[in-house]
Image (cartoon, rainbow, N blue to C red; front, side, top):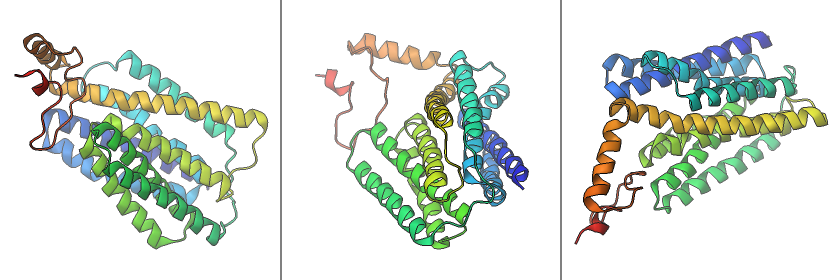
Length: 303
């Protein structure tokens, strides 16, 4: 029943949108109700996603799941009683249109054959190794934003593999390992730097990996014509751009809510530039230094 897959996928996307918006509200104003709502809806959204995969192909379900990020923008604006920024509206429109084109161009089959266990295991293992290498590489990167980017890519791979294994109904131990690993790596990414450094790449990698498995391993997508292949590539590029813009906008909105729509932050930054004679980019990217090390942009002007 592919229509049930669509219903559950949309329900999961809507739940994710509400959960994400509640997280932003909790970060901005710290209400206990919003925090609890976000904590409860997270597992509910995952349950809807699993139900969607149980009733339909991953090539259909995964792009619909990305709509959760898109729906979060107007919902968050409604909770904040403000209008979304023009850039956010453009990114939402582009991403939604790209997902629609991708769904139309991807002829996902409901009655796909069961994947070969050896091919599935080797493919999952190869992708898991890439995720582990990205985590190891991130550990040696001193810049927080770059470290968060690598960790976000690793988390996207692990979450994507989890969805693939849910769909394949095989290798349940690997499924659990990917799920736990994805949560841990994602938390490390959140701790490393701002959300916009990891969230866009996580969602893009997750979606691209699952669509790749749908085509090459799970056999859920019929062969593309030249026209549908070109449309899919353009849609993926547009979706990537839209997700990146939305991920960057998330931090701006959260900061503006906390600091009075950004005016206080800009005032502090301008005062620092005037007092220290520092570069105008001072404070544009806040990074924490290790204990005993001078802070960039401040201590270098002392003395």
